Length: 476
Ligand SMILES: Nc1ncnc2c1ncn2[C@@H]1O[C@H](COP(=O)(O)OP(=O)(O)O)[C@@H](O)[C@H]1O
Ligand SMILES: O=C(CO)[C@@H](O)[C@H](O)COP(=O)(O)O
Figure 1 (spheres, rainbow, N blue to C red):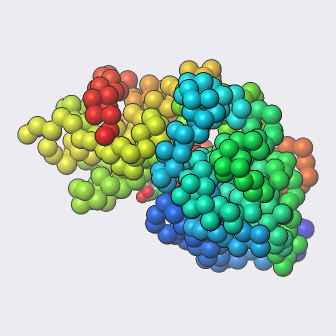
Figure 2 (cartoon, helix red, strand yellow; figure 1 turned 30 degrees about the horizontal axis):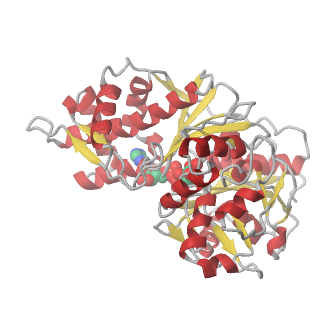
Figure 3 (cartoon, protein in one colour; figure 1 turned 90 degrees about the vertical axis):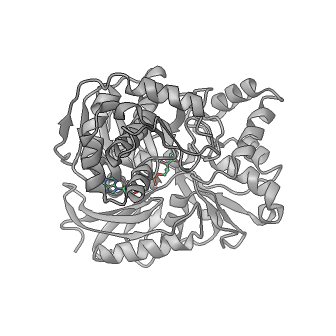
């Protein structure tokens, strides 16, 4: 049945929801899709992801006719398993900042007590400088705060690794598999060398060495969907999956405004930024994916809309009705602490309130501009690491906002391409599944969606005023 017209499934197990798309393996045409919500919070029982996957797959009409499946997922989350494969504690997600102190400790420890030396040493070793988001820092937190759980941790993996493993016919924790894209977000695997740094894993775990997933090749068949003959691809981190879904090539910069704000670019060489601003991740094809991530993105607009008591469409209208720069009103959007810049305990700030600016329209404008200014800093950071920018592609839930679409080009100082609203992470996972199924050297060329191009005059002074206010408050 599946041989005549094979279908493939792509999964995005993201922060807020699980999304499943089912596409034609040959053409990429969307056949069906479904989604289900994840629980709130930054510590989540992994079983909730499996439940959401089951519900999303059912909403997508089931998987009976699917010949291959891959899982893309939120990066960095710490999933600890005991010797029998049972979950040791709730997973700590990428946006959980309790490990901020552990990150600082790991930097100075590797630097022999010197922070600058430590930053350089981490960047050289694994392409990243620890921040609270990365798995290694969560493991250090575990070792210090919950040593008994650290002792019970026989294996550690990431959300997409865990879901792939749960969906497979394998059961022992020794059969866990990951890929380059997600492994590169652990801070104990190097995208440059392709090797685990077990010394850094042991440093994080204070001498313990849990098992880690095998790093599969980009299109490897890593198993089968339990109870079926459908092939499982290795999966990958959500940002690498989005790049695959968009068939991103060198010169493309992807700006994703989901729960996280992400600026990423496909490159052929590894990046090692000792400032830690640009993380030297890998992509899902064998290339690299230098990336800047912020913790405050779509939910800044969710919060602004809730604060003003309006829906997203009205928030967007309000923002577009206010003048550029919101007459000096600036919203620094560090609502959940921030990762870039590294201010894990920061809070948001609103500066420049006057009788003139104390209007819903000014607040809406300041929220959109504050969000975009943080991402503009991210684009500038990847450019500073030598990334060439030919196209800027805007995706993620908040890319649906007309205000975001129309204001981004002025604040980024570049035209912006917006593909139709879609699940590009799940699409990338589906494309990987088709690739694994085909056994071909390269992923098939799927028709890419038409994109709308937005242009605008530079938003003079907006980023400068944002930088001034951010510097003044430091978001604290
Ligand atoms: N039209 C819109 N305007 C602004 N934000 C939106 C809009 N539609 C959805 N969102 C927001 O986008 C976010 C979900 O985006 P998504 O990329 O799916 O996130 P994630 O992959 O992190 O789960 C939610 O916070 C949602 O409220
Ligand atoms: O931490 C990062 C990237 O380094 C985030 O991009 C997470 O991977 C979460 O992604 P979303 O749920 O926002 O898509």
